[in-house]
Image (cartoon, helix red, strand yellow):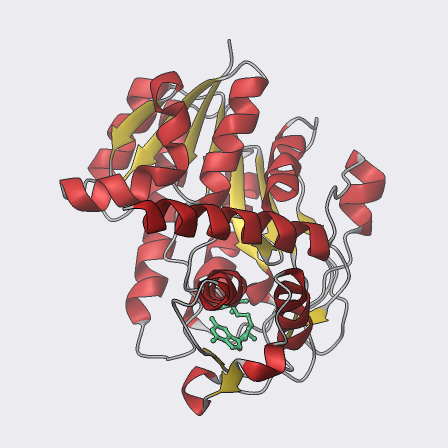
Length: 326
Ligand code: GDP
C-alpha cells in the first residue's frame, strides 16, 4: 500500500485530495496545525467525514523539528505540499507570509532529502506567481512577475524546489494552479462570499452584497479536478511543472449574475460596491494555457462555471437550512 503525506489536509484541496487518494487505495496521512479545540473543530470540518480513515499528525510549517518527525514517522512514497498562508492580501506589510511559506517548504524539502529521497513531491505553485503578467493566457514559459507577498512566497518556493530537483535529483513537480472553487472554498474568497451571501439574501438574513471590483476577471476551475491533476503529475516517470487552468475567464459580475439567477433574484437589487474591497488594477487577466497537462497527461475538467456555482449554492442552502432549524 502506497503512503501519502499531505500538508494542509484540512483545507479545500487537501480534503479533496485525501478522498481521491483513499479511493485509489493509499494510506493517507495529513499534517494539521496544533490548535485549540474550538479552532480544530472548525478547521477539521472538511475532513470530518473521512477522519476515521486517515492519520492526522500535529505539526507546523514554522517548526522544522515537527515536520522532520512526521516525515520520519510516516516515510511517505508521495508527499503533497499544500499548506501555506494563502489569502492573497495585496498589502506589503504581510512579510510573514513570505517567511512562513518559504521556510516551511525548505524544512519539508530538507526532511525529504534526508529521510525519503525517493519520495515523489508535489509543490503547490500558484497563478499569483505570474501576477502582473504581460500576456494572457500564460503558459509554463511565461515570465513570472508576482504582485503580492503570497505570489513572491510561491515563486521563492518554486525556485527552491527546482534547486532540490536539479542538485539532489529529487522527484518534485510544481503545479501552477489557477483559482479553483468548490463548496469547501473559504468564505474570504469572492466566489464563496457571493454564493453564501446570495443564499442569505434569498432567505432574508442579509439585504446587500458588498463587493469590490466587479470587472475583475478570474480563470475559475473546479477544485476536485485540480487535485486530480496533482496526483497525475506524481505518477509520471519524470518530474515536470504544469499549468492547471480552464483557459476561460469570467468577471466577478458574471459570477454574481449566474448565482443570483439561480436563486431567482435580480442581482441589481442587492449588489453594491465599496472601495474597501478594491485591489490595485489588474490590467492583464490571469488565465492559464493548460495545453501541456491536457496533451501530456490527459487531464481534463469535468464541470463548467455554472455547474460549480450550482454545487456551491446547494451547499450554502444546506448550511442555512441546518442553521434555521436551531
Ligand atoms: P484571489 O485574489 O485570486 O486569490 O481570489 P479572490 O476570490 O479573493 O478574488 C478574486 C477577484 O475578485 C479579485 O480580483 C478581487 O479583486 C475580486 N473581488 C471583487 N470583490 C471582492 C470581494 O468582495 N472580496 C474578494 N475576496 N475579492 C473581490
